[in-house]
Image 1 (cartoon, rainbow, N blue to C red):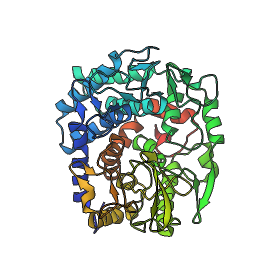
Image 2 (cartoon, one colour):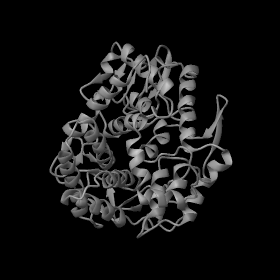
Image 3 (cartoon, rainbow, N blue to C red):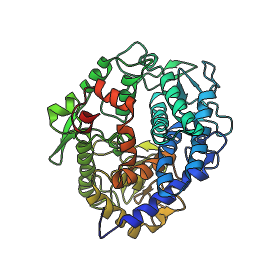
Image 4 (spheres, rainbow, N blue to C red):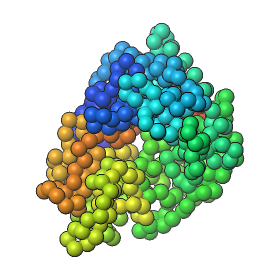
Length: 430
């Protein structure tokens, strides 16, 4: 990747310091990773999965030795395999799924968080990545492969259907299944692929067909795409799966693939920021990235004579999604494989206009120039594991395709894609 601005050396430095989050905010005995950098943060199992998927990059780039990465990975997989599963409210998981948030010290359920189907998906994605990368015939690496496969086989995807055709978002020991299911184009694309491929508790093919029926095809700024407002929806499944050139039935009909769809979504976000329909400060051609992020807090404020509504942590998106003027550089970086020609100048702009946004662990989560108070408005004080992982991995996918190459040879990914009706491209050679 050669660009006159924000060159490869700077991208690699951003990747390196971003990865340091997974070293600093980790319990090395259990492999648990903090959701965010605040002192009292619980573990997020999505952050754990992203850490597992980042360790191969860390080895290849020299951030960790292979031995160190094996030790971290084994600690993580052993903990989750041996952690208590059951219906009691203080367990780590149930039916092979895990609670969204866990206590960083005990590994038990944090507060009243849900048994999360999507966060378990990302954890399993990380475990399977480790199983593909650590392929040597050593005792430790063999155990990694065995544990990754065992953890995947334990997940009861059929149970998560809860008698319906679409997977539920989660389950609570106090009240049962979450009232909302995974429908519409979302980050659950990876969930359905893994669920369909399960050798023990597979989802029926009809669940994927039903999911496709809930898609919404839209046109914004003259660009057609499968709609989802938050940018992370167009990125997270792509952390693991290389969708270039492969199509399911829906995409064959539309004559594009999910990779191109994400490229279009990235350009639509940029066009939205250029148009800036709500006149937020700082938006423009090289200033976009509206996605899941921290925010100023839930409140109403009058700003320059305009009444504005602000939020705390939220899945922001555009067009048509919640937008309060909060921009997230991580959401820009995670689109690097799709549209480097607009991502790199945007990162350059953020570096020049907001140099305070990069600190110890790369880009801070988000900032809001519209929010009153301070020279630059509001700036997030924290980092989030959900942000750090896609930065590390999507930079590597853009440069070398490492995680994509690993997962193209993962039999569970291949089987899940085939059962979902994907054909063509690299899948035809699998």
